[in-house]
Amino acid sequence: MDIIENALANARSEMDAVLFRTAMSPGIREQGDAFPIIAGGDGRMLVGQFGSFIAGFLQAYDGTVEEGDVFLTNDPYMCNGAVSHLPDWLVLLPIFKDGRLINYAAMFGHMTDVGGKVPGSLPTDARTIWEEGVRIPPVKLYRAGKLNSDMLDVILHNVRVPRWNRSDLNALVAACRSAGRRCVELASRFGDDEFHSAQQLMLERTRRAMKEVIQRVVSEQRQTFEDYICDDGAGHGPYTLRCALWREGEKAIFDFAGTDPQAPSSVNFYLNEEMFKIFFGALTISLFDPAILLNDGFYDLVEVRVPSGSILKPTFPAAVSCRTHLLGRIFDIMGGLLGQGSPQAMNAAGFSDSPHLMYSGYDADGKWFQLFQIGFGGIPGRPAGDGPDGHSLWPGFTNVPNEFVEAYFPLRIETYETISDSGGAGLHRGGNGLRVTYCLLSDGEISIHDDRWLTYPWGVNGGEPGQRSRKELVRVDGSRQILPSKCDRVQVKSGDLLFFDTWGAGGWGDPLQRDPAKVLLDVRRGLVSVQGARRYGVVLDTAAVDLAATTALRTEMAASRPPIGLFNRGGTLAELKARCQAETGLPVPVTPVWN
Image (cartoon, rainbow, N blue to C red; front, side, top):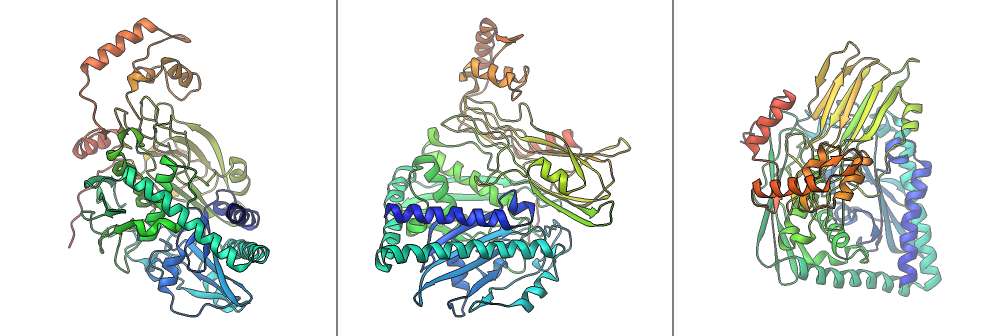
């Protein structure tokens, strides 16, 4: 079983290698915005990354599944949320051996553009999914091995960068076919029955392990937590996400009753219950037992209840293109829930978002260019230590190298650095956010999609919240403009500077307990300023710690501060709104009115 398990894990890695070497768009080729899966014949994931979307696809598809077929879809409403917005194109390949279905391989990747009203296909002001791009129902891209080229031509006729889409789609198919070959090889090597039995044992082993984890970390007592996304880009917000968690026997129950209704704009997230289960599994495994293999074997131990018509389960044809803010916030919600039962094992907030930048127009040669790029923020302070600085929410993502961006797009990266003091102070410091300064070298337009500009990534166990995100445009004429966190079609001129600051994560534990030597090291590395060291009660004298002054300052701070709570959100919503408006001059969102 270990040999087969590791062989499948290697086949999943080979899927990534094939994809990244053959895709054209920087979002997939360089950033890694794709999610592979190898599943059994019943659609249950055996190996993969934050996936488990095959079951949702199969439940929605009522046609035949035959050898040589390759399926394609991108419509959340037609695959039970297996993908959650139109830019994610999902390819599903049934794997046959000797005429019998033995496995599935699947992968979805984020396309740079799928049509719609704005370049990048993430319109903030969309009111329906019709405005967001071409909708592809579950269809056979290949039928019995033959490409449906006419259908593909129609799809590509509706996107702005068809060459990239065609190449990326071919790469997704090639990646799935590589997994198919490996599964057939394994079944031939070990025998069909042994190969199938090993897969079942993999699922059962994960179920046993997750059963023990759930018993330890999920209480029978109902626990509730809520967080917010700051706004919907249309002037409304914050929107409340509320979730309760408790255990009934072996089963963990997540109930999102009390979550706000769906938004009129595109920030809605069609949350597939099976996808949430894999999020829960990934988080708990990483926190409590990283040796557990992440697969679908534990799904019967988790029940997820999401109210229909909520911002996490919108009704058709609600817009969903900008669902990333809620997708990121789900991980903060889970951390806040699980941590109440085990405060010393919880993370702070910081898996808060996945900020996007789109930049498009015509270059000096009159050729169309279109950049889609994902930014990184701080990762939460945690029981084991400090949060990483400037890291992606998704563990497999990497930044697009600045040299690549500058070579292929009309812009120059002026600065790429962590923002000193942006991580929340704590015994374990929250990760700092990033500042990327773009010098735009062609006239065009930009779109920005971000959050955590109003609410803070909260700290825990005495840790302080992280810094909020901020976007500022400095025009070539010297004028300055603070940009909303969600905006489209902002006209820019050659020579304009965009300062793209992401959020810092919350800190973990009492900052007055942090080793002064670590604070000094952070200062030397530029992660904390000399003034920022005083948040930890540390006084620096040139290049050394003033121990006497530090002891006195820490004693004074400990005596004057309020009692330490489990969460530190930085203030009430009313206080955060007032503070944010004073700092940025941007209008604060108002509470939405629902019909």
